Image (tube, rainbow, N blue to C red):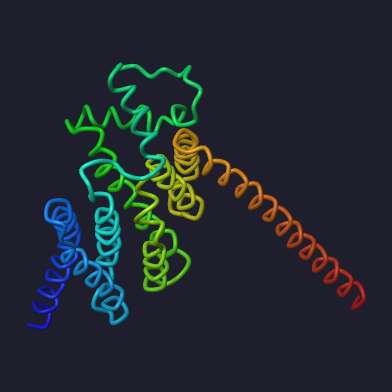
Length: 274
């Protein structure tokens, strides 16, 4: 009986979590067509309830991953689906170059513009549009936020290898709660994609369960994809890598010197005793 209740409770919680992105979609359409944001306000209250449920262990285990994913989708959709057009600053430039490729069925690499150089917004959106049969507008408003919603999930998988699941969830939820996550990021499609590759590289760096060769291959693939997605984040990654390797070198050197000193001390002590 107790097991049955737990199973029913888990199902109800899962249904509650799955309801969040649906409410987000309904709420944005209420705003678009009726100018009513009541559903979105209810959504914000329900999203605020999620970490409370986690704190009291009502949501735990694998359900935490579902909670992170649906929360990310709900937060991103509750802004990206406002209006029937793309909105923001950078995204209009990204949309323009995607449209050029789609209309001409050709990517003109001779156009000297940083947006055109990023394949994440010049070539990929037209491909997704053709494969899925949807307009570029909805590629940027639906598909890219969906892809970006996996960033918090990957971060959670990264954090939980270092700290407890509950603290990892709290860290990721704080990350999603930052205003930039669900507003500005929706208007920078190329960075949305780039951050996915960035966090995957970080995950690979600390994941010890994957074979070294496979890990190296994946890091190379993600690194190249990052460079083709967003230039600024690539610069940040390169400098972060240089700093990390430099610190690692000096720390290892210090540890090695300490090891040599200890060895020398042991030898001297054994020699004196003789």
